[in-house]
Length: 376
Image (cartoon, rainbow, N blue to C red; front, side, top):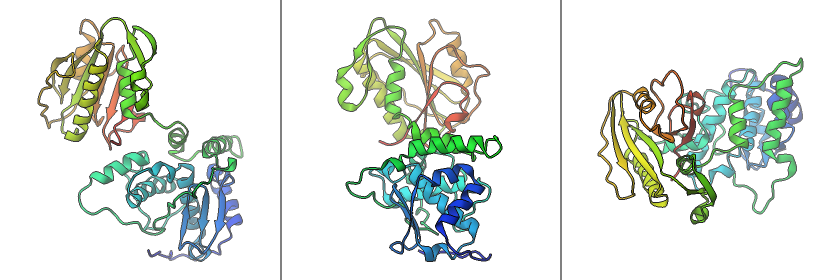
């Protein structure tokens, strides 16, 4: 690992003074840094975090100007606050580190007063996504992955057996720092771009897409009796259906954005739901700019059509057809990347968008709930 010294003058490294400067540059990050345990150490070559403590090599830090030192501090602070060490799970460590660097460097680049050297990893197309989604996209890219540069592999393993102390309860720290930033010195909000989304992501992690799919397809106007105990072992806490048939309209975007892997996983979940709940019937559609179907699926053994496409995308035909159908479906599910024109007004029934990795950010869907198709 090599570092590149800025052509501007370097700055002596003083950690307490650096945190003080950060409070002046960004009230949010300055407040968040007060919750962190920051340590000067020569046991690492650059800077790193184990999710609990922030570690900085004084010799490395002192080779950089003040704004870059602030950027490095926030880089490690964000890794810790967003729990990038704990969220790694079984992911490849180096590729996960790349994904996490893309996310935090994107935030730093948008924050006035902070700077990272040109060698710092950036990918403007990916940095707005959660780290898990960035990781999935990097996994699928052809060619060798980008190499960790500048700070290097800075996500260390958590200390074995250590229980996270109260002063590094990052959910609480993020929320309190946001309050400080919104108030500001003069009562004016000063929350960095993208932080609102990250606070929600960190404090309210999204449910697995399978769980959301099952919940939507069993969210109906009929009565519920209790949790369906058959699925508790799979951590699917689903209501047990009791009553009349439920109609579900499903559409698959066949514009070329849906890969065979995603499609197979999606259809397998639909079949599993049909097997578990015989009261559910599914009307399956496909759509590019023209709608095809429906094909009625009322059992897990029903054949599904061969899905082909490759043209443009429009979500309007599917919802236009449902608005005039009789009866109107109880719920609609759309598998897509989200890039295409939407109807001018939302439908009068629940909608779940199952979005493939790299698809339209969830906040940009004009209606319905989104589930990101990540993981296995």
